[in-house]
Length: 253
Image (cartoon, rainbow, N blue to C red; front, side, top):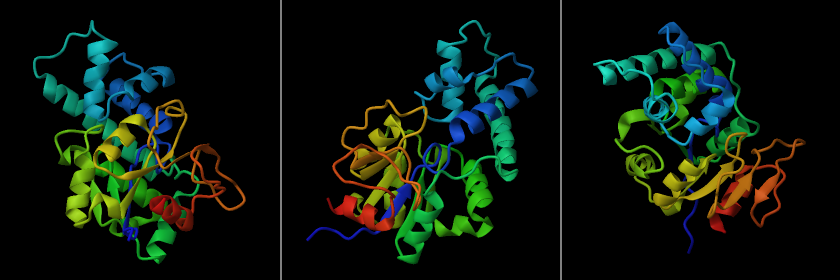
């Protein structure tokens, strides 16, 4: 007999909210300006930097590939960590001002899962502070307690596309991969979830719509709301709104 669905595991950036272009990118630029660096990450450049997961890793990638003339300071690791900390501060402030809403259907699905006693977890490369800022500003201060495990940031050494962050979440929940389903938005995300042997639902965003999502149980433009349909980009099931009944069907398929 097939396993019953026990838990939903969500990625954060790009999945719960469109945080990349109008959130993280803007916060990085604010941190650079504050440090009196003349770096500006355009929307196009940031799309290329998203090939790498993790903010500190993204700064290093930028200097290795796009700004090779920059003379790295002697205490380079500290320099990167300090820039990233400033960026996190700016990002959290944006969240607290309510500048970044959840994507369509996210709040509805999370509340449906809670009502049905389905367990919830987060599995992300972003920092715990960013997760808390987003969840609290959109769902309310008590909503962090809704998620049994928040696997975030540097809690594991290898970031997505490595499976470690999902493996960590599964271990903490005491669940097997075939009892859960993951929600992702990017190629690195699905490589990570699939390496952890999780069935995966994809909702693309502007940066990831052309990514390869082979093996996803479905690829949607968004989760949708009743009366505001989502669009199926890849998959054999006709869906107008990703509700818990549809998620269970995709899990059992």
